[in-house]
Image (tube, rainbow, N blue to C red):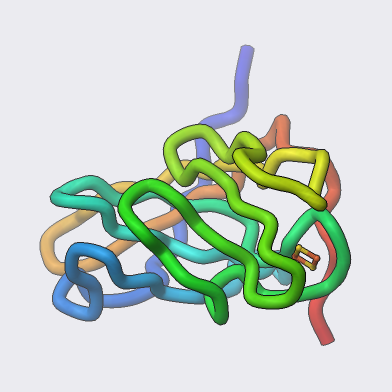
Length: 116
Ligand code: FES
């Protein structure tokens, strides 16, 4: 039987709007919550190519572009759209509870780079 997901509050709902990102840390893992339209997506915040924070890049529609070398990922599933990255960004679980944004790590997500 699967363990229930453990959700953590990472910010207030009004902190985000369409096209904006909210960097946060859950259990030592750097994440970014992206809003596209009315939908929120939670992904690893560290690019899979080298070490750069995706939240310092650009969000254009569903396309999340790394500032350092320009890799692009689809925020809906984390897949690589443009290199040089070759591995997808791990996706996590996000929900709205009242005015809070809550995120739970995906237990299946591969290990991520750690942050200082
Ligand atoms: S670190 Fe993101 S594309 Fe190189």
